[in-house]
Image (cartoon, rainbow, N blue to C red; front, side, top):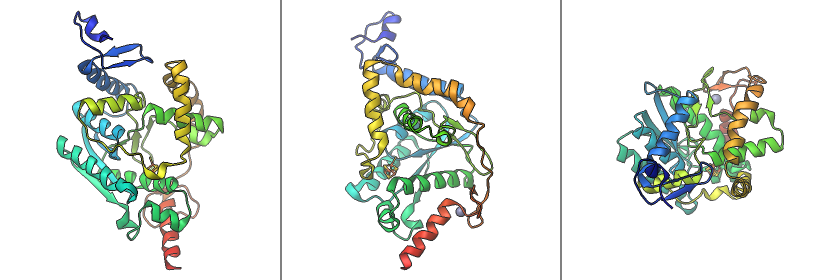
Length: 311
Ligand code: Q46
Ligand code: ZN
């Protein structure tokens, strides 16, 4: 298989990848160019940020967020990283993920802000918090990540938070939310969530890129990433929906892109005005909350952990 871009320029080069959903085969150099161009286009088209903005990239140490950070740097955006150490000791997951994030920050010479949840919850990581509270690990993890990415971005004066959600993540969540007609969640599923009342702008520049494309970019750019999936991810329902989507995509290339971007174009605008909850500052930490008792979910969770630890 030959690179189509090279062929169009009168050259012949061997392709390293064929992308059926774009009907495109590309060599190493053309893939890198194409990949970064696609991200740049998404950023501009969706008005995510400009070169004047200060961007905080939330990195997990995995392929997607590290590919994003590296590509944004190469595209000339001002980006710093932020890593949350979840204290997951199973298979050394958190230690390895942190090392990969740190390694990239040193390679591109950009700072990495680190929040360690064991400092916040008296030595407890996600697994210990799960055992203590009996709340599912991913719901605890999601709460902590949302809270601290927002807090660090606001405290340190960033214009927005960029996350590494890819097309596969987005279509799996979209399918899950659609199957249960979860209008609330659907009305929040956008690649750009604008800043409002104490919330930093959140953007997902990789929404048009698949896991496979992010992986290849890491390999070609020699980005060292954490290969292990989170050991607490077993039973996460989006894994099943990703498998379903990959089967559909094999039969009908382009379905993921159509499903996601047609939702954004045709359905999301009808949903977004449905609910804008009233927000007020949490009386304990000052972060925005929708609760009537004015204590945010994170502070309530902290209280719960404190009480259970005492007993
Ligand atoms: S890190 Fe956290 Fe994921 Fe692990 S505990 Fe669940 S949510 S699976 S992206
Ligand atoms: Zn609070």
